[in-house]
Amino acid sequence: MRRSRRSEPVDVTKPGAIDLEMLRGCGPPALKADSDKEDRGRLLVVAGGAQVAGAAILVGVAGLRVGAGKLQMAATAALAPALALAMPEARILEVPAVAGEIAGEAAERLAPQLAATDAVVIGPGMMEDAVAGELALRALQAADAAAFVIDAAALTGLAERTEDVRRAGGRLVVTPHAGEMAALTGAARREVENDPLRMARETARRLQAVVVMKGAETFVVTPDGAAWRHRAALPGLGASGSGDVLAGVIGGMLARGCSPLGAAAWGVWLHARAGARLTERIGPLGFLARELPDELPAALQEAAG
Image (tube, rainbow, N blue to C red):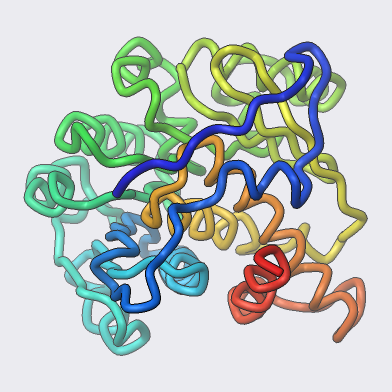
């Protein structure tokens, strides 16, 4: 897929706003009226495990809800049949497991798919840092063209492998919350919470990746230090599984051809707008992460309108 152009901030030292004007400068390539799924890209989801199996579903559904054309999902033998029934839209790829998690050698099993896909989301729902980090690194090496969203244990598992990660610079989005940023950098969580923008800038430069520093105020930062911010008073988004949906939205936008910056910005805005719609309809608390993807098509339409 052709990557869309990047929107530039006026001042690299001062974060810009993630708003509709910014989004329309870095959206996915326009689709023709007769376009089909081949024109909207392929998304590969490598997520979930024995303890948080549903994370893969949240990611995959979110990716489809923002328009990704084809969905493939990796799963261990124990989870593949259930995932196939839960996700009839997806091709399920059975991969090796270790202690209920997708094993590092799954990257070799997935090599043909990794080589042919447009975007990969890896890490949501995974629990073992070392296993997930090794899997992410092998997947990066096997896919020399795909864009990646790296989250959760797959991200913190790369804390000691930053030089290897840098080799894939220019096609990565990482999505830490404060705890994951602390684990990734070795800083105290309080230090991250006191200055999330500085930590995001340092990490973006170190990894040569776009960083989505999640929080009530979320920052999107590029390797050169350019930054954008989005603030939304939506406490309901601070719920289990919400970050998995965000990863899926970013992955779906990457599959559609957005640049890493564009996909990150669109993901943050769409995720928040979906939360706002549920807040209006249900209330500020109590809506579920699984309900967020259903609001994404309307949020996309709002942005387009």
